Length: 223
Image (cartoon, rainbow, N blue to C red; front, side):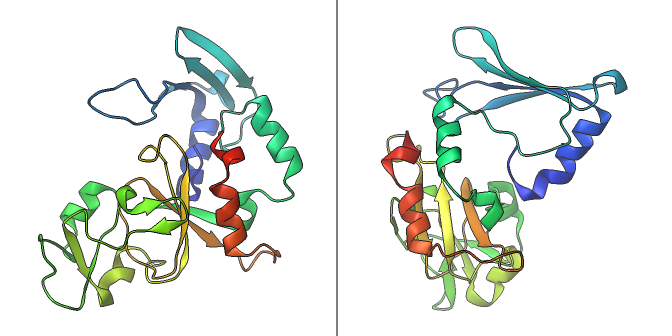
């Protein structure tokens, strides 16, 4: 829906048929899981090409928005409040940053560079962090996952690991709020943690990284 990695997939869906996306809310799988989910329903049909529909499902199916000329752009479930935020803000994150996601659990488990151990195999290994390590404004640099990787191999996992940058979590571990911090050590991550990588080759901006983190952790954005 939002990541740069999937822009080709979004364009393919737009070209080949119609897409309906149903937002299910975070409590759909409680108590087994506390995670926001969507259903993506794709209809392969040239008659429906470039059509995308957004639905909300809480007490019943409700159509929020239908777009007949979708070309694969980022998909967001907007409200009046979020539209006002976008009108106020000069920049949008996707204009300033590439948004990347951490490796998923199966990739970590199957990677030849990852070791599972309660203790570090040696001093040249780094812990793999996940959402539990991310709090608002800070990162806990401890191993909570049990996964380790050599410092020299972190870029084999993702090219931007090892480089300081902003990380953003889904926030469900802190009362449903978005959590972001500056990973000044550039540690490797896994799971539902996103990485903001500056688009330095596109244009410059006068926002410091600390200012961006402060905005992402603000009460206004959590709302």
